[in-house]
Image 1 (cartoon, rainbow, N blue to C red):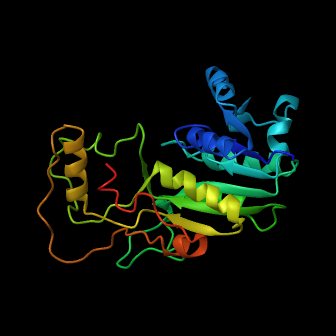
Image 2: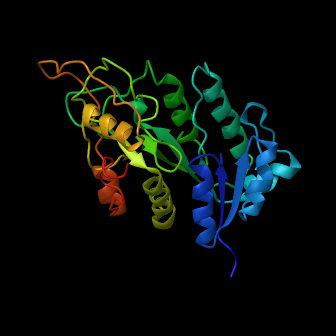
Length: 271
């Protein structure tokens, strides 16, 4: 029986354990990195390694096999203060894919594309075209209806889990705003399982919000996150009177479409 094949562009904090999970499922996994030193690590984990840089992407002979698989997972988040470089990177990727055999793409995006709202945020909610312009442009490029592949976009909430503690950078800070605002997080293990379910169930041409069920307040969550790390607790401004727009991400479509039950439905209990 021929091994199932999949390519993962970007084997970083999420991409590497995702690649390992697919290897355990019997896939032949092709994984990319921009770092030459990481090629050996990928090979040791039974991931076929490629060094691919989207800024200067060319279909070199040594990279051709990476794009010869039917399914591609794009896990290259934009860097902060990158200007318009990220959209150009995804445009370069699009041009390479037009000369490839890829038929199905999963594009890892973020719930940062949404504007705050007074109601729960769904996949149909208003998008933040000012502050998330670059990411939305990248989504539009990779999911263009004229492309000869089908794209599913996953908009992940704040990612946490192994090696990424959400309380680290906020511990000890003072007078933080919006103590009662809900937080939106998702654990690494759920991210991996959701991507695997999309591939397994062949849910293409979709957009999913991926966020844990529960949304504790910023004050409750970050105070507990700091305590777990044995760091000084942050302090918050006094609660403001009156409701204002905020982000409370709904995962209802994902749960109903994939019949998915979260491993870590409450991020507070997963710290």
